Image (tube, rainbow, N blue to C red; front, side, top):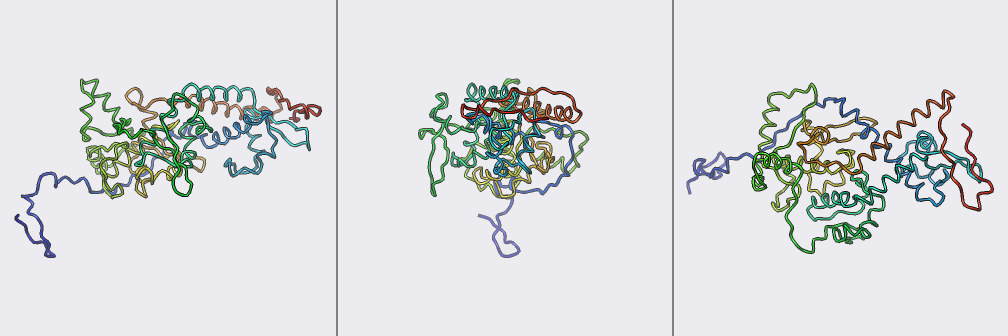
Length: 413
């Protein structure tokens, strides 16, 4: 075979004898930096803005619901502020949301007790009805997340950390065993050091990977034009939908890079048959990272998640150490929502995709939005209280027989 000598004496194949595919520069990495641009549309998404506070409210609500009297003394939760991620006094947090929690004076030591308002009770029942009636949809999202991992299993501790974003009930491990519709979907395994992991129960059968949201989007367009599933077998036909923010104009060189980036092969987040080294610095690896993050956020309730919470998934999803750079490199796909001392990552397609997007509405999203509306009513109640106006008072709860002699006296406003 003809070869020429390089500067350091190494043998280099003559370029005219190399096969054509060698000249495909898919392993180059272009270090693109784009300036973050504020977008008022995403900054005013209430379900994202209030996600952190709402998570704490729902956790406290569940503690009250689990109690036998449907109300709890402040002493039960006052020392758990770090667990509930409350900055400050727990009692002050309860009083901040009178539309959710009604305060009473307890029967002993005049301790404040808290119960749910009728409005919060009604939303709790609606939430539980969704957990019962639409459990297949909820746990299918968990199954897809696990299928994105190389080992097809995830530690329970990590699933608990992602539970809020996936919209799973607190007792999801119990429901996995008791719900007939999802029986046989999962298996609980114990690995070294006693760590429990949840895996996919496939009975050793190798099933084809499911289609990602990006692939479904392309399939919709192909079907409208007479195409079929076979047409998406070529990864070069698949690109990410982009949504520029208002007033944002990309530089020419960045726009050219993005055009070339979209032409790179699309690697499904569910396909692990390539056995590549995903941590390489290349645009192809970057496109694979974007595909994984795109699919991950499409499974979330509001198509967003706190950025630091995603770090626990890095190893299991075979992501590079600095995978967070993809959020900054691709502002047309993701938006960094930085408010309330928190950085949330928002998938733009979840809010602008419309009927052309294959992203399905999460069953829990309408309830979350109702919870946010109820949070807004707390502001009205507190304003009326400060101005001396009368506002509705919830019916006080009743204690068990031993405590009924003292009763529950409503606290004076």
